[in-house]
Length: 95
Image 1 (cartoon, helix red, strand yellow):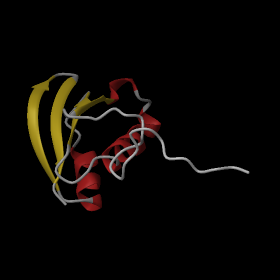
Image 2 (spheres, rainbow, N blue to C red; image 1 turned 90 degrees about the horizontal axis):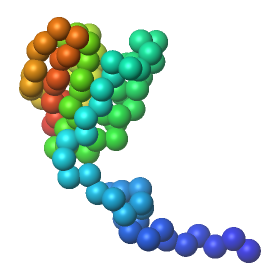
Image 3 (cartoon, rainbow, N blue to C red; image 1 turned 90 degrees about the vertical axis):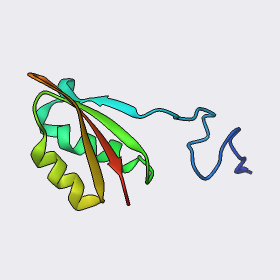
Image 4 (cartoon, rainbow, N blue to C red; image 1 turned 120 degrees about the horizontal axis):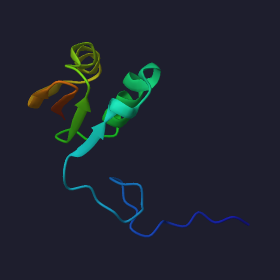
């Protein structure tokens, strides 16, 4: 008979691995193939709780991606760095 045992450290807010994210997650998409880049960011952003942030590192100003994220949830965007091939933005989930 299979038993469903609680995972050590498991709670409603986490995966149960016992680790907790306290800082913004940095996601450098420059190495992600272009064909799956937006979908990868959507997946990462969907894992961010309201009030949490994702620091995105991109090869250009990701305006189309930001518009798509804003359609999914209310966001705030803070530009941290704007260099050729190295744009860094903090995207915060507002609601």
